[in-house]
Image (tube, rainbow, N blue to C red; front, side):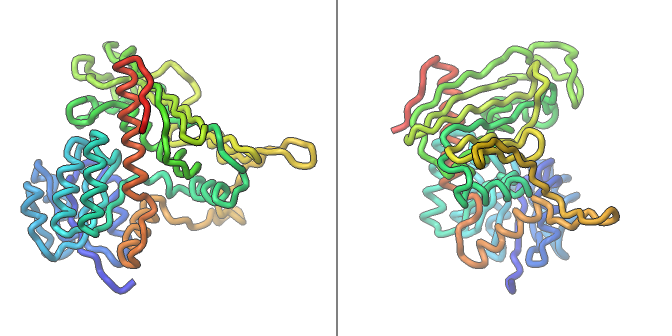
Length: 360
């Protein structure tokens, strides 16, 4: 790659520091030249740590977008501002990576798709779990047809007690929901991608507020404030696709269940199955006998060498910039991410109405 991409970061909080900026720093064809956050001191800190020489700092994303020299924008803000900032960036002729979920509402997600098409700029969504080694391997298995037709699947996003108590995670107005839209979105994206099926027919779902009212609750990040816990603590959905395939989606931040795990999928096909519950396991039938194979995903060959693998976040960033450079579709297309948002919204709507939601 010959081009050096000039990148602006909008939102310099946890996900920007935890994933986007370190990964971009590892890309030889990327330089972060602008940083924006409504808490401007966070932008200054990010610029000092990750910025190119002369990097600029802003408190208003609109001012940052006026810089015509910026090629790419990474949107790392709360869910309710994803659509506004992404659309403004696309209209300012920037390519955009927006953090998941795509938007707070399905209508906003569809607007983002439309503007991306109209602008001719690339848009992708930060579903980084596609870039894990087990996900990459399983995608190849599915693409090769080893599982046959995948007609039943489970999307897993279960935490026993791991409610994020910082930022705006518990604020329904800012986030649009709780574990379903936060971690359930990853599990659903992973499952739909493996199945290569983006045509939902109907959704039936339930969201619960059962444990959120507990005071002094056990929690990985300390007890939550029940008065501020305005989102669900768990949510579940059954999705039927137009071809008859069925997906069960389970998500929770707080649930009395011992079997936990998030951003995982279980797939059942006509020729075999797969799950991520205890490593990546492929199962099937061969010569009238059942088998189960645990896939070795590390590169360890000798005791003193564990192998050298690219981190998922680094692979995500590299392939994103490569898609821009080569003018190809990104790994996560906006159309795929939009379907995820539409299904999540349908689960919430089904929970509120007590009825199944049907897609046209």
